[in-house]
Length: 172
Image (cartoon, rainbow, N blue to C red; front, side, top):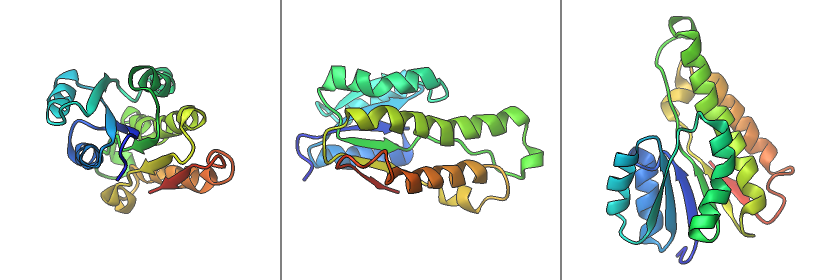
């Protein structure tokens, strides 16, 4: 039981992110739901009465991502769990994608989790946890998202050697 904890979940208005938020809330964790669309965030939060706050934000805005953990703490009182779930994937080979689509995948799937993790860790309570949602299809995809996924895997490997040496752990 995670009773009394606060979790920040990116991509929290639908799919895996919403399922994670529902499970956390069922276990007594209050959740900060993050996604681009305020309407879908409100709908998701309504399904978690008293357990969710919404933070409309596009994770491509790295300055806003860096400020997010402090905003969550100011509104909810603490931060214990970070779930890096937001992601974008364009199917197909790299040369079939527009250059800016590739850049978007790297920003959303790699840069944003790095920025968010770095901003959150110093503010998390001891015993905190960082979860990164890996995309199985993306990890098998030819070209496309693979560089960002491998980079995020590298972040996880590096996490134990500095970022997380404060009684925090990573999963994913």
